[in-house]
Amino acid sequence: MTGYYETSSNVELCSACSYKCLTCTNNTVCATCGSEYYRQNLPANSCPCDNGYFDAGSKLCSKCNHQCLTCTGSSACLTCDSTTRETNDLVNCPCKTGFFDNGVDSTCSTCLSTCLACTNLTACTSCNPTHNRTIDSNGGCICNARTVDVAASSPICQSCHYSCVTCSGTTKTTCKSCDTGSFRWLSSGSCLCLDGYYDDGTNEICKECHYSCEKCINASNCTACNPAMYRTTTNPTTGFCSCSVRYFDDTVGELC
Image 1 (cartoon, rainbow, N blue to C red):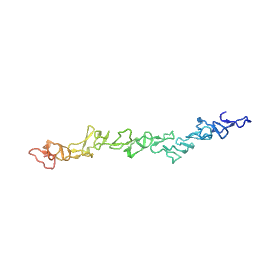
Image 2: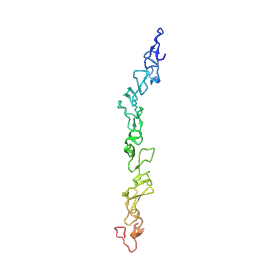
Image 3: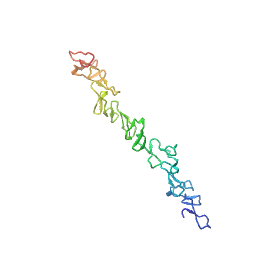
């Protein structure tokens, strides 16, 4: 009969195996173990409890606290899952940074890639500053100002083009808003310089054209002159806007 062994051919009554054994050869040596009782056949003859269970003195092994990989009691961890939990605190086996306790498994679950630390899959508690992210009131790690989330495969927010305040991409044609204090206005996704200013190719703040220009491409080359200011043509020698006939340049303002 399962759970008993024959002590002697001369004795009719069988003796009970150790509670750990499914079958045995004597009261200390198991022959087989019961997997339905969360016991394993190795090491041989002893039928230890499976990982995540502990021997409570009965045939059925009891479940450890979910935080433990192995344990000696319901709340006394012996080892922790070293891949996702800290191993220097056997009382709590806390999750490593970037993981959270799902309340079920000894292995912690992975936080969203945008989080540095989290309490669940939707609530970050901190963000990785090297990813250009800041935590918001809803527990999300959102992109910092003037950065944008453009790659689903990467948690790092990328910088907008220098001309943009907000953007949907990283090029100069993906601006969503501009800084009027930088003398820019939004046109078809680009933050263009106002008339009388030019983009130096580096800075958000547009630089002022030469006083004689209505429009320009740099500080010394006008591309348009304002006839209302009695300036009509661009001087091919200087690159500035010349005054109309009978008007002179006072070298102060655009008005001749």
